[in-house]
Amino acid sequence: MASVKPLKIIAGDATNPQAKGPKIIAHVCNDLGGWGKGFVLAVSRHWPEPEREYRRWHRERAGNDFALGAVQMVRVRSDILVANMVAQRGTKVGSGGPPIRYDAVGHCLRTVAERALLDNASVHMPRIGCGLAGGTWQRIEPIIIKTLSARGIAVTIYAHA
Image (tube, rainbow, N blue to C red; front, top):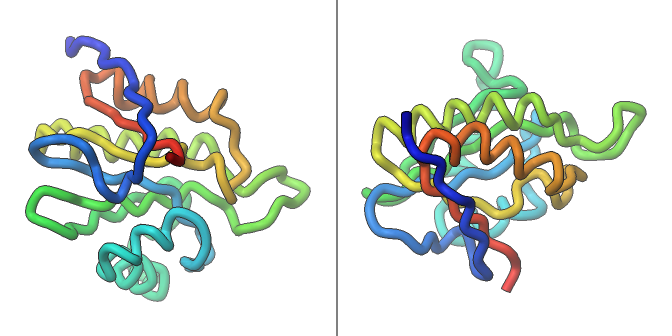
């Protein structure tokens, strides 16, 4: 059994991961095919591929796995993958509460964990699900610890500097 790795929380930009070796940048996307607010804008400023692939994935969803809980891995550099994680239902608060879906976050992070273990990669992310998705860090952090840290995966959370 892998030893639990503590979460590392630092000030900085998750699109500029502070680690050596293979890295996965994980972030939350919505299930509507919308890409235009929040952390995705920072991703798009660095690399066009994650947005292009996400939009294609959504457009072709009748014939693929696009749904809540699904993850799309997009290589943006030889040592960096971006994980587009569909863990947000829509974009607005409604009768079902905020758009974040915690069960989908867990499902997505389990997929990210499998890839991180396969590639011996560290995982980097903003405080996923806590911005426009309306989630709380008190609910997200334990999911990250259970799915990634408890499996010995190094995780760095980037807070706004």
